[in-house]
Image 1 (cartoon, rainbow, N blue to C red):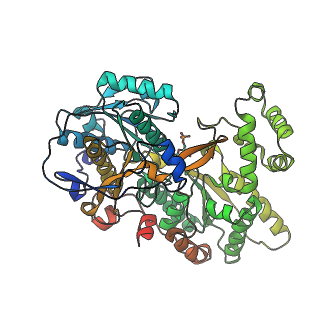
Image 2: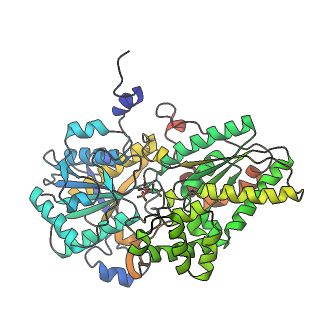
Image 3: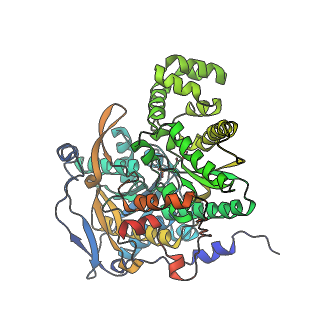
Length: 550
Ligand code: FBP
């Protein structure tokens, strides 16, 4: 047998032709809606974005053939990986070449820092072809550098001038698209003749609104995690001896956990936004879990599955206060960094916290307390992916069950296994939905650029219909903005979309969770993503999207 360089699926997938909305299959004409307003703080946003505020929403329709001037474009991948990033790039490439074969595409390397540090490569057909329909961001790499000061914008303008780049596409989440908008406004104000277009990326699913139905990558990541959860459930139901505590990525919002809950119907799904709304303590969360475990044990079922959102602890009010105090206390703290041992660090921190937070900190298991003081990300936030909340909950649940056992209330056996799913799905081969959606987003960005637009996010809507009926166009980024306090200052930012407790996906989950928790078996086994086969299996969007559109 010959050694393999690519799997059979990799080879077959390279020739998959992503589906496009009908309007993008031929010549395009732009239809403009009415002038727009930001979601809140209109006067402030308008004053900060005089050139890019109020622009109309754009949708594309089939039109007459048109000659477009030559455009050179630079693309940046920003933040965490999400399945489909490579297809955004191939969509931009194909769109640009279709609109004018002389157009060129450059990739800035390693994220936004590539623009500032002038690290780039030209993306040719040979290179782009290698990455079609693949997961990952390795074609040009990604990074989390924030574009936030004029010196960076000027360095960007310098390289654009050198390469004759007329437009930049920033593929990122809410913060990166906020940066895209600020950059678009800066270049417009300073007559730099550089357009900036954003593209909605993040597996977390928290960049969405009335115009952006979902961010790309959410679909694939949730399908991968749901497959794994389903497999675990089948094992749990076969062995009947373990409780599986499964933490799922999603830095802040619980969309991933909710979607995986809807797809696999585990016994318990914790939603951070609900925990916060009900002002629950960590003990309340533990009690809810314990109640289900005791109930199932009474029916002879000493096994089950529990989904835990990665961001949970930041939504528990007392923990949120502790984390915020730690963020301030540890920012550029050389004294803390100079301490050698974990014990010294623990003592140091305890001495400086408020009495309430010091108590919460003292009561935490040592390992978790240490994780809370690890390095912050470039935005100064605790890196929740490094905090093993599932282990914290296991420890607390085990303690509570031991007490209940001693008093005779609990007669079961408790054995647990912990899991964390995040990196398993972030670079998966994109599902058909994500492959089609991202390619369409990239193609849309190319049209917006050729039509000289700036300060827009590429948008593809009507996503629960077949791809040919999708509506492509652009939404002014200022329209999604409001003012929020960040690091002590009011800043214009895109509103982050948390799970809405009055939204259809959560309501559906809330109406069904009691049945999924009890002793009957409601597990669903989603199985692996299917790339070839009947459309109702292969092209299905997420349950979140279906419920939101129902
Ligand atoms: P983005 O918001 O940049 O898309 O990243 C999402 C995410 O995958 C989160 O779910 C997770 O908390 C975080 O990135 C982890 O990032 P890193 O691996 O850089 O620590």
